[in-house]
Image (tube, rainbow, N blue to C red; front, side, top):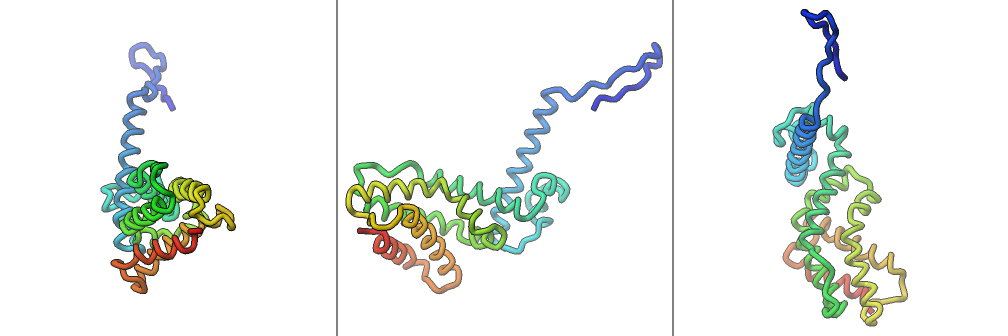
Length: 210
């Protein structure tokens, strides 16, 4: 808001200028840098310690506690932003759709293994997020990557290699649920990391395949 003061010579009030576009742009850029630093720091911190405090995250990010809370009012809000960023990164690594020249069953097997490899990178973060975010919200974060799964399932049904006696939505959910259950099993020590990919592919292809 502009403020006024008396001009000593003329006796007329003058107004201090409002922030110009360049000033607002700098503040916006500063805010974006702070948000990016906080999210990056939180990704690392949550992966190392699911109970890490917001104060510790602010310290690692190089921002003050007030700055952190001005962008993320709660632990849940910060974790939500972290998961959105992690899934975006994972989706970029997965790349585009599988080639139509690749048989659907083979494409599904490749997607299972590549998804598992990426999930292994974010497994501890996933476990931390499940303590804060609802299962429904976690599933929403994965909607975009699951489009790729759905497209392969649809093509596989046309090719006769994916079962069509069950709803497509259910088959997508089976893929999602088994993938994340495998990550939890590895984290608990009940499934060995070196055999997890083979076990996951065999289980999913058996469950989804025609």
